[in-house]
Image (cartoon, rainbow, N blue to C red; front, side, top):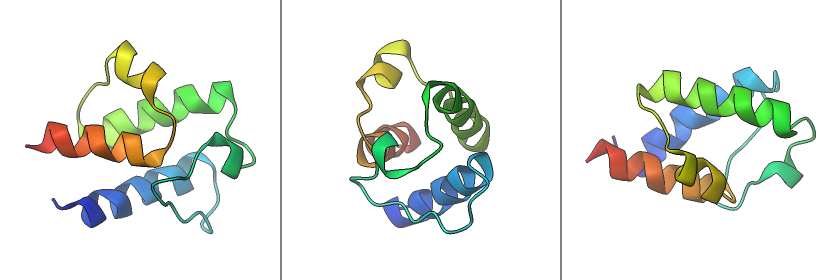
Length: 80
């Protein structure tokens, strides 16, 4: 998968978790850009991304993610 394919799949996960089909992800999208993205939904989001991509984030990766671009970087690295 290339970066845009991963972004499209990730967008579907975000739309499902936040129940909002209008979400459009960019590399700079962060919790402040999505109204319902609080600490509880962050846990749900991480779990949903892990299920969708059949992988697990490390604690360091989760705590270091500041935006969608950083999440995409990790997903792309894992896809290699």
